[in-house]
Image 1 (cartoon, rainbow, N blue to C red):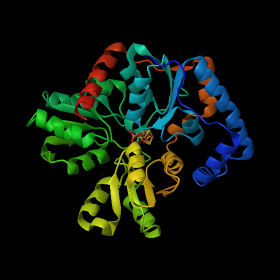
Image 2 (image 1 turned 90 degrees about the vertical axis):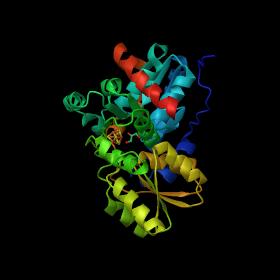
Image 3 (image 1 turned 120 degrees about the horizontal axis):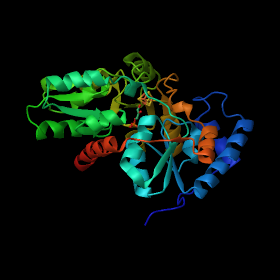
Image 4 (image 1 turned 60 degrees about the vertical axis):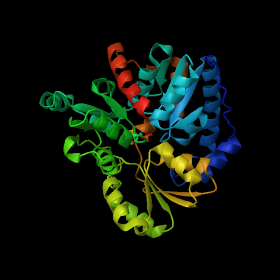
Length: 358
Ligand code: 13P
Ligand code: SF4
């Protein structure tokens, strides 16, 4: 039975938001959450919720969004989890706070069932690192080659791909593809750091895998030095590392060689960081990803302590979305996400293939 109105309790109160923002976000966004601004945000959030109800919209926010967007959303989560959530909700409208490839992924999964809107149309440097001509050349050299694309890709690249993967399931997808098509060459794109981590986590012959050399400008800057400095400061903390980080493969090698001497490191998608932090016996964590995730972790696991590996790990694309723009989008239906139907059909098949193996 399709849900038509929000079934999730969203708590909007000045005292609650002021308390949460000052406890969990003050160091992340210094000076942003003044009393006056929080009052303004609370007013806008109430309008957002009432419009979302009128328009039967499900509002969702990626883990890197500003705290107020995470608060006003029915759910905050990682790129795949949010698309799966909106597919289950079966609402006629979705307002997706994230970057464009995420809105496109949601539209591809939902097809005609829902209209997808975004507060803005933010890009992503990882997606921008994809050049279709280079893929054409690789395909021309390897006509029976297999394309595995990370979810951070545009809809056209997804449509050209045999499999999609996310940071949650990339090693499973790679291992499955290598088993399914023995001896065939694989192009893994676009993130070279994720690709290197995944290669070292599976028994797949590296000689058969070509790694595209794309990277995210936020994560590639998170190097080994930043992690080592953080570990010096917080020696008992566990390391939660997004595999897009520039330090990911060298940290993986170090953890394998040095073991706990280098600290306990875990390579996780944003949502997996939350699951891990909840069940780990550790009380402290160093978080190597975009800072928005630190707010989510602190809010959901308040009894533990989370340190951002770097206060410079901010994705300006993600931060193009604001509560003002979300309200405007709900009022004026400004940015609707459209994906060509043929591209949707092919991209959906590649996503579906991933879902059947993970
Ligand atoms: P997640 O899929 O882990 O949410 O990551 C998306 C992303 O953009 C990472 O930079
Ligand atoms: Fe893209 Fe990097 Fe921003 Fe993630 S953090 S959305 S990969 S630019």
